[in-house]
Image (tube, rainbow, N blue to C red; front, side, top):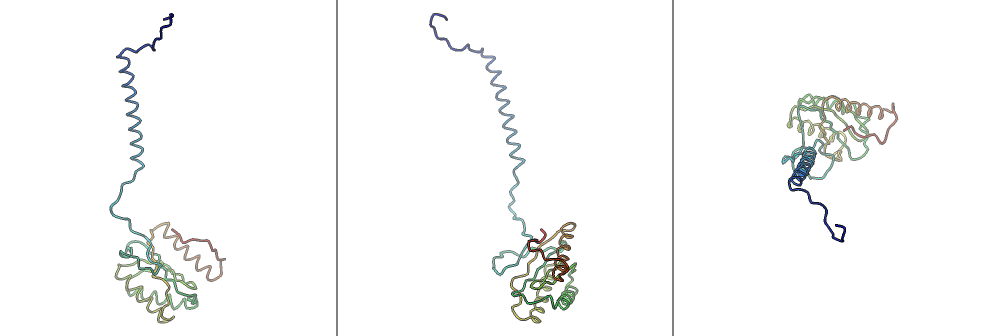
Length: 195
């Protein structure tokens, strides 16, 4: 050893080498299993059925390839927007009476309504798709007769809500709109529609 011979590191006996490789393999397998488990927990199941859009309408583009999402068990936020700033607000009593008349006729429950200068908000619960279609056609037709042809700028905007907190927020939103249009409260420009 001392007379210039180069020797390699001492070799391990074969039984110790196999023990070490087994523990390394076990550690590797457990780490791999942990990674796979974490990945599996983070992954979401792919759905072949697309989720329905809760909001529909509000434009003139004919891009709908499916029916409007409606539900007879959930509240619906309905908005009718006019082309110009025809003051619907001055005729709010006529509009509300027409809405209540047609709602009663077609079995629709109106929880709240708010008539603004250029749009109308409703929170409704429908009996079915056909009753909703008849209600909208009758109401918008009568309003167009009273205020002139081509009154509405867009298709009716509808968004499905949920009962509970979201429903309460929606009613609060309509109440705030009423307070602002009557100039009891100051108008807040950046306030958004409740989601």
